[in-house]
Image 1 (cartoon, one colour):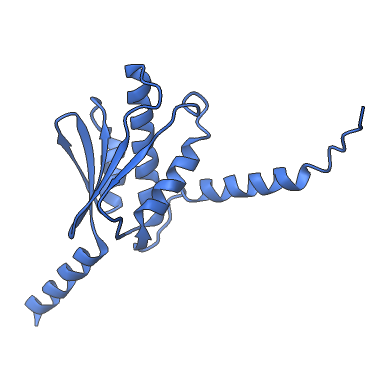
Image 2 (tube, one colour):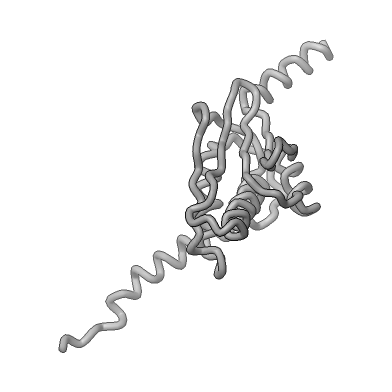
Length: 168
């Protein structure tokens, strides 16, 4: 039998912990301004964070993109927190329906809006509504879908130009 050196794996474990700490830091509420963000990257962070949920870590959450993902503007912490809660809703819905692999989250993009759609019969909690609003979006219902809508960065800039033109 080869003797295993417990210190040999320590650098790998430290790197994993540092990565996890960095992910958790994304959730901390900050007094930061909104910034341009790639929704797909924020959603990937949210999914990696949710992989650490004790009960739902084995549930998969597939994301299907309809349209080319475009940048949005939001406080990073608020957007990631909203998306973590949507990933949670998607996994809970799949778990409740007994579906292995669940129904996909759908990200729809057009010129003015990005919509993140989750198939769930559950109503959004007050916390989810509030954090979604702080991320600059709003929630609606489309049949069995809970939809988080967020204006694209291009749409926000168009609105700002329009507002400046009205003031001039």
